[in-house]
Length: 421
View (cartoon, rainbow, N blue to C red):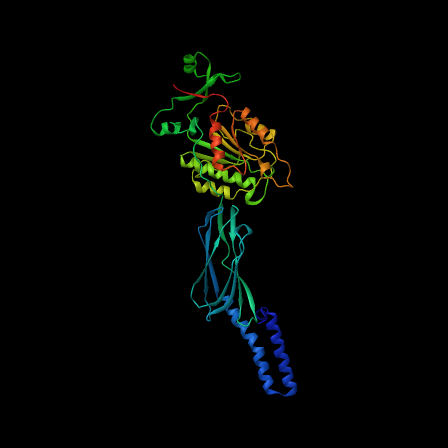
């Protein structure tokens, strides 16, 4: 009984107190009519509390998301199914679904009457503005009576998982030359049954391993030539995402970090369209997608990995070895100091394709944020190391940045020749 009375509102408590006071006066004054009125006044909030308690216990709900994965800026629909298993119909039901700030305001519904053993469906849209793994729910229900004498809160439907993946922009073209061009790359030759006689060679430089001298090319050109790689390129590309918090500026969905994540997703899916195997790594060399046997060639795997990615608190790149692990590299970089560029290119072979999109993060910076590193210096250092570079700003479309990067691929570093034999 004490639990039932705990749901009385101020109006219900006042009415109950007035009923007891009227009953006491009726006994003192010996007024039977007043006693009948007092009995009715006392019984009314008690009856309302009992009915509301029964309705709360018999209330059930389920939540469904259509779809459960959605891009930033796209809409998803939430369907709530309510059912009352009590013996009496439920009325005066106020519903509020718990929604994170990144998904918008909390939707509210008022159900005047919920028939017994009948499913009632409620719908509302969500339009996420931030990527991430979001939790929708729980659904909070407030059960009241028609007179506003009692109210009870109950948690329904639990939590539902909504995956908000970064927005993907269409890109055009591929970097010319090497394995990423439109020509006959190594992977095509392997599938067609040809052998592995091809070799990528270049002129000998001081310090090269003499065991890699390609004697046929040396005899043909009458100059010492060395083999750059023992096997032809197989279509693998490492996409490196710099998600250090100190390397980015801005906040929320318009920050440079979110632009970099979106650019990374666009590049990965664009290369997937042309059959390239993608290996997605973070700024510490950790493989986010595309490791051996994890289905990294799937768009969904890459997008889910980027949806769950959080900013890192490292101040420098912590890769340590070749960031591409022998593959071609496309790096999406934030603000880069000379030390960061040195750590990126130190172990990178000059004969391998290396491309970088460097964000001019000062264009995203707010008035109170720290000064960003000079993007021109980073570009010059990367170009000197043989990298193709393009600069990204918030006003520049992603496809334009990508096409500039494709163009820079043909004007970089040393000349690499492919010969048969």
